[in-house]
Amino acid sequence: MSIREAGLEDIEIVMAIERACFNRERYSREILEGMLAEDYFTVLLAEEGEVLGSAAICHGKEGTQIISLGVLPRYRGRGIASALMDEIEERALARGNRRLVLQVSVINVAAMNLYLRRGFVLQGILKDYYGRRRDAYLMDKILERV
Ligand SMILES: CC(C)(COP(=O)(O)OP(=O)(O)OC[C@H]1O[C@@H](n2cnc3c(N)ncnc32)[C@H](O)[C@@H]1OP(=O)(O)O)[C@@H](O)C(=O)NCCC(=O)NCCS
Image (cartoon, rainbow, N blue to C red; front, side, top):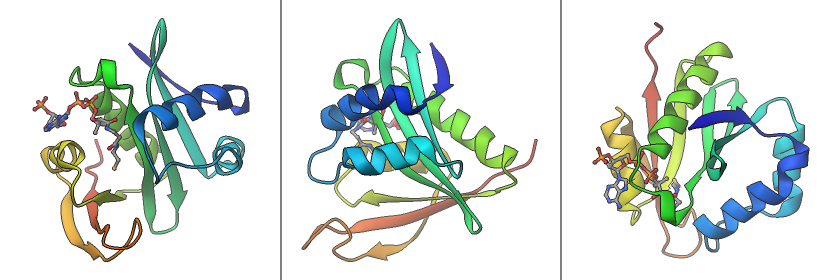
C-alpha cells in the first residue's frame, strides 16, 4: 500500500470515499475542492491498485486538525487508517505542528478505539456538534519529535 497527496484532479475519488464512509456529516464538493486547492489543507489517499481510503488535515496555528478520515468498508480492519494516521503525524511535524486535534462522534466506537490506541487524550465534549443530540468528543495528541 502507498499513500500520496491528492490534488484537484482527484476530486471524484475523494467524493466517492466521503460518500462511502460518511452519512450526514460528509463534505460537499465545494468544500472538498477548497481542501484540495489550499496549501494549509492536505488530503491523503491510501492506494493499492485502487483507492482504499483517505484523510484530510488542516495545518493551523494551534496545531494540525484531522478533519476527515475514512477507509472504504471492504478494506477496514487491515491497518489502513493506522497507516494514514502515521502519515498525518509525519506531515504535522514537517509543518512544525506538534499538536494534533480532532472531533469524533461519541457513538463512533471504531474511531474512538483507533485514536485512544494512538495516544489521543479526551479534552471535552462538544454538545450538538454534529446536530441536535449528536455530540462529539474533542481529542488531542502532543507528538514526540523523532
Ligand atoms: C474508523 C476507521 C477509519 C478505521 O479504519 P481501519 O482501516 O479499519 O482501521 P485500522 O485497521 O487501522 O484499525 C486501527 C485500530 O482502530 C480500532 N478499530 C478499527 N475498527 C474497529 C472496529 N470496527 N471496532 C472497534 N475498534 C476498531 C482498533 O483499535 C484497531 O486496532 P486493532 O486492529 O489493533 O485492534 C473506519 O472504520 C472508517 O472509515 N469508518 C467510517 C468513517 C469514520 O468514522 N471515520 C472517523 C471519523 S472521526
